[in-house]
Image (cartoon, rainbow, N blue to C red):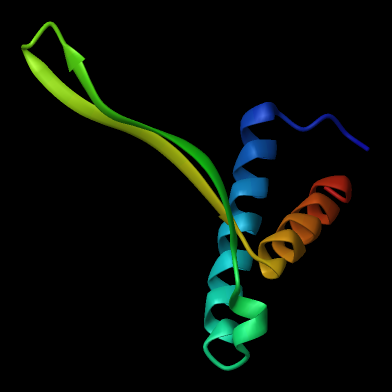
Length: 81
């Protein structure tokens, strides 16, 4: 297996996860059990900075079964490139 750059590795995995999630959402319209997603993340509500401005910060990941399938296919593609 050749060395794959970190940026290329992350890009291929991200594309695999996104395509898997899109396919999972589409299939989930017809088979609701498949479309169920698990969410994981954090959220900071109303961070005040010296009473000058306020912002919200958060990051949430949603996974369904097809997200894992997409990641698996992306990992396979990485292994064979």
